[in-house]
Length: 181
Image (cartoon, rainbow, N blue to C red; front, side):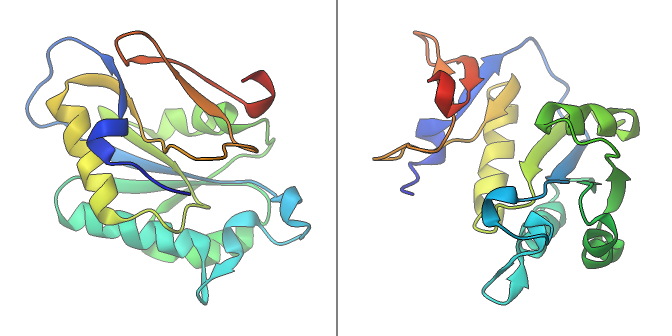
């Protein structure tokens, strides 16, 4: 995967005026089974360089928080919830997604627990995400006064991945699965 520069690849939806200091929560989606991995282990618990993927994500988010860009972390758990909760420990608050009906449903399950004005949503199986990328994303979101900001990448071969659709101004028009692209 070849990532392009964040400022060249951020997709935004413009909005109206914003207050200068808004609170932000990170919502980590970690309920998936990882069936394509052919394992009964929760997807986020598979190790990369000796550490579960979700731990890499939480490490990055903790650094983002120390830089003042994040107030707290929530993790949506489902498949293998006890194992994931144990790994998360005191680093975040876990929310159970009893019925797993997809990504949007996971966000809906977490919504009642969110009081912050801004929500940073990411998956627990993104071990290569860096604090620097997340901080740039947060800063871009605020500087553009965007309603939504989506981080993406440009791949030479996007087979197997969904697509971010943009309008003629470069703003977010939609996100579709590979089968719909």
